[in-house]
Image (cartoon, rainbow, N blue to C red; front, side, top):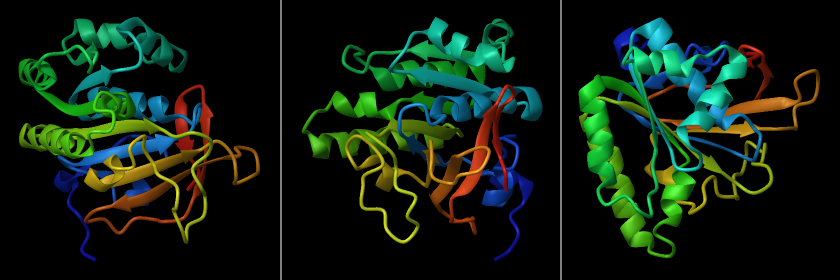
Length: 236
């Protein structure tokens, strides 16, 4: 497989991760970050956004359906990521939205992206967005394609989180359990990353796995990782 140019890839800056994926996420792609409670999904996404601003000059938008803006800033603070400072500098937008109440969610997101020249977007979590459609699977699929389509059109690389009950399986030969609330988001996504609380053993006893990533010759087995005071470190 030909080596991808830097322009094709969006580096996360997460120590050890980009080497697993030919340099990072495919530019303008939609990616799912899935795992159980406390597996590090939000940390991974915050690190992606923060590093994008600080290291790669790419403005960010962090959309939360679960928490308020202050909670997101608080989640980032222990790692030395001062989100409020980046917001004041117009490099970052943090939006707390309610998919049940927002009349035009797409328009709110589109306005933020255009106003601040956003290149990286996090949706935390897509599970709450999916719940707004309950058992309307056709409508959910339609809205997911609509959302992903306009984000790609606006030139954004997107990470979405999804929480699963219990632990995602580490079995690399079979993936019988769903990786999102509705079992649908993983099929819409260009890439799927799973985070695991346990299973590898050793000092970290955490793992990360790239389940799929289109147009990428990626590593496919679970790889040890740990959460440090500077964020996630993948021990590849």
